[in-house]
Length: 278
Picture (cartoon, rainbow, N blue to C red):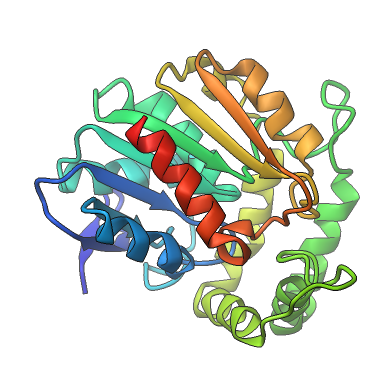
């Protein structure tokens, strides 16, 4: 397996496909998944001649199930360690959900200051802030995330099955075309990871205020979001985030769910390609 070790001793698994001389596209997965969640995009873009890279976040997938560092700062630093190890330049970074938060912090604090990033894409992403606060009245109440933590601790396997079979892909909507394989694959990815990383990751994706990260990003940034996202509601996420970016564009997909990269891969891949080549 391809592994790099971070400065604080964490082994991070990554995939690196395609010509090493081609423009790199780096994929950052969502909670509680792994780089495998990007199969539909990595196969598409490597066929288009790009170099495609994706890593498993610490505590997720095949990376080390370490006790500490399950926060956005470490997530971004780990991504920076992968980019530095592979010496990625002129890269496009694409993040889904929690991975969108990881991209925002990585680009703002590491990638853009180091001159490594050409463009960024945030898909169904959590920034600027998910949890409801006085300054973020439209956010999700903390009690919802406390409920996630309790359900995960009580029966993680059932919780992950329920999320995948229900709101993540919109399979709970009337007339939805349900794929058991997609549900099983989501569950498989989640269960490979560490329960502690997943438990603590809830705080990372819900309570990290990334307002300043978004303001600091100068590269062209595309935000893609479905307006039927039941996991990260668009009104308190991408609709706010685009206003904070210096060079941001938002595209909204009517009726699309949180997991639209899987359920509508052909549509999303075409739009990603157009932005990257544009």
